[in-house]
Length: 151
Image (tube, helix red, strand yellow):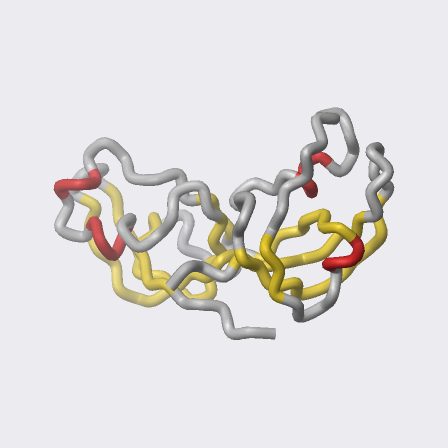
């Protein structure tokens, strides 16, 4: 397994817990004029899912939203995803290819279209957990993977 890329950022004090997972929604309307913009918001990708791996003692005031922020280290979160069985090799780096399926009622829909991942993302398969039934007849495996952020 490859080492996840650490990113230092700021998270609200209430959210700053080791292991917490969050989706970065992008900057608020007041963020761009903040002196901490680049470390707080500027180094995270909107729409991506992150996991907090370390919370530092340092706090900073968010003057824009009148709250306290904690310095934290985050990595791309590990996510459950359905992939074609032929790609399901533990430790493999794959290019995520979302299916053309339109069955939103399928029990695997959230695994086939995972929040925080996009078509073409480079991802490492960390674990293979089970075989899945596909309503379209495809052979799928449920895996846990982590996106490899673009450097």
